[in-house]
Every structure is written in structure tokens, then in C-alpha cells.
Length: 252
Image 1 (cartoon, rainbow, N blue to C red):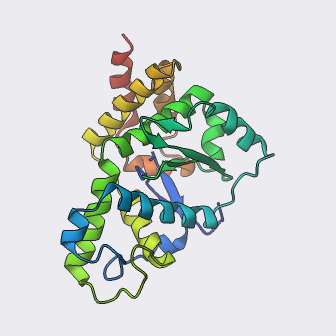
Image 2 (tube, rainbow, N blue to C red):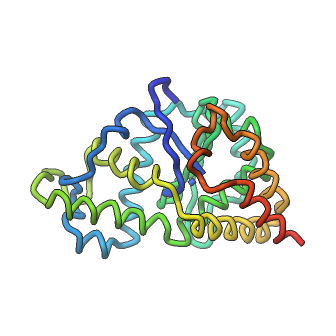
């Protein structure tokens, strides 16, 4: 990504394990201009289709701000091979791209967007990256992403009311989308949510006949990154060591 990016933990719509976004996301004030979701009641009853709509808009903004590996790039070619047969999971259509950055990161969105950072691809095997994808899909399929979106919108409505939005219904401005990225993607998942997403990924790997040991080795590699500037999100993310130990027991 661009050098002016700032780190932000992502657990989504998406990783999502982690993620980074432009300085814009650091200034977001989500209150007041949320388009179609204009009050707390609307946010609380946000439909799956509305969640996917907002996620698609958020993903488009993130892509616009990132340096994406072109089709002929080695990272893009590797990702195509890794995700062969992974364009759908239990009704969720998936789409993938690589962000060219040395940071060790990835994220997902509720519309099936999954983005890998080239720094993460450099340190992980193909099956370890599949574990990451499965984990992020788990957050979406388990409803964690939708709940986070509802909370962000409802909090906004409660704090600022409805008056500030002049946007077309269902279509958000870049500043509003970045606001959602900051509050929906950046925030840390609970330990229970992380465990649920890990369990989903283990099942994901089993269904597709991938090596389930990769769930453990991927987390062990993250343990080794503790304190690294390339993955400083680990300081606030649930312990990858504890998660690795838990996943190892499932291999027995």
C-alpha cells in the first residue's frame, strides 16, 4: 500500500486477521451521514443484502487506495493457483486480490471480498493462506461482521441523529465508507469470535481436503512476529499462541 497508510487491526468484513487503511480512516467520525441506514432502528434490522452492499462499497474504496498486483504479477498468479476451487463457500461468493505491501496482513468483507497482502504471502505456505481465508470467511458466516456493522451504524445514529446525510439512499460517500472501515474492520474481535472463526476455518480446510496442520503453523508464524513493526497489530489481537495450542488439539 501507499507509504502514508496507518496500521489498523482487521477482523472482518471482514480478516478479517488484520489490515491497514489510509490516513483517512484515522479521522473518521461515523456519525450523521450513513445514507439508507439513518437511525438506530434501521441499523438494528440491517438486512444481509444491505450489509453486503455497504461491504462492496467499502471494498471498492480500499482497492482504490491500494496498489493491487496485476494479473501477470507473481503474487497474483500464485493467489489464482491457491484459490482455485475457492470461488464460493456455502453460498458466499468469494473474490480475491493481492495488495503489494511488505506488511503481514489480510482482510475480508461481508460481500466475499478477500484481500491478501504480499508480505503475508511471503511468509506463509499455500495451505496457511487458505487457513487465513477460511478464518475470515468464518467471521462473515458466523455473523460477526454483520453485528459489527449494525453496532457502528446504530452508535452513529444515537450520537448524531439523521440530519447530516445528503447522500443517495444506500450509497455512501468515501468519507462515510472510510468511517465504516475504521469502525467495522479495524476493531478487535472478541476471543470467542476468534475461536469461532478458527473452528470454521478448520472445517473449511477439512471440507476441501487441505492440510489442517496449516491452521496451527500459520498461527505459530504469527507468534514469531510478536513485536515486529510489520505486524504490530499483534499487540492487541487475541494471542495467536493460545489459538495455535487450541487448534493443535483439534488435530488429534
